[in-house]
Image 1 (cartoon, rainbow, N blue to C red):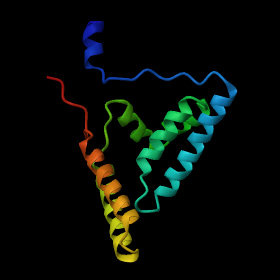
Image 2 (image 1 turned 90 degrees about the vertical axis):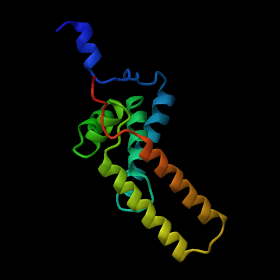
Image 3 (image 1 turned 120 degrees about the vertical axis):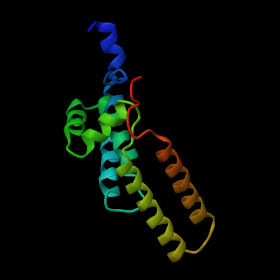
Length: 146
């Protein structure tokens, strides 16, 4: 098979970003990566917090600051497949979509039952709804070549 045909069948890959050049920029990206990873880990057990988005943000910032953290995320048994899917077509697996939807519904229900109904609660519920619409607009697999 010739090289052109191989390239056409390969999934699309974004070029790997280079680490930031200045120490301050690398430090800020590193801080963002670790804070995002921490929030993403907390979000695993707290309904309503989006785990996937924080892990994606952590991976993005890590590629600009810490090759070690970036490699750890890429090779992690839970986060690695998520990052690979995202990089190879902005894919979010159906299981992740369902998990996010259930988590947001649970959180929205708790907020509506336990908190005073004011604009902050409605704003949070609307934000979760918009986030859920965006999540479900992402593909679940790569399109089949024709």
